[in-house]
Length: 196
Image 1: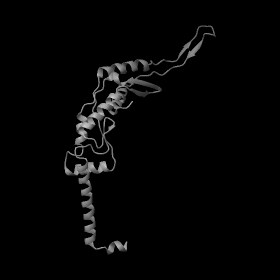
Image 2: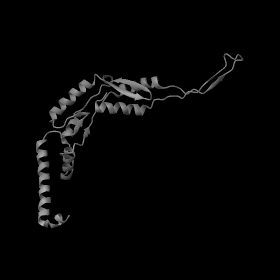
Image 3: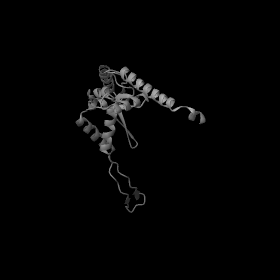
Image 4: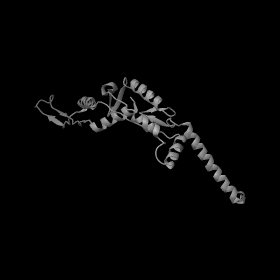
């Protein structure tokens, strides 16, 4: 600690100033290196696009979407596993997310830009999502699942016929009902990230 106190104030100032200048040079070099390209850590609809230009992003998202349409979304509901073919929902992935991914870190003030660049350098993920789909088809899928899942409540019952072999007790059973909102949110979430 005594060694630190013995360093002149001018050397402290020069050292801090040098660190600040080096940080600014590193950020400027980073900005030049990624000019016209998505910053590291950026995803569009679940597809990593860091370092790609706008055309490459469009091609990557279109290719991923075409492959994704052949898959099936798997939803866990209670003790059931439900499968929804992605193609039945006709998902579309507009180009707005690609444009937003390119603009990330380039809009706003200097402080916001520096924050975004530092965040990217530290490996923080940033996701952009834009999806449209056939809502009528989703309604049909949810209605079909609801028919499979819904079960009415049954109260316990006692049967008595005078003949001991036919007497019995039927236990109560809880009903089951689909939470349509949660089901739709789960499907939408997987569509946005192109996950099965």
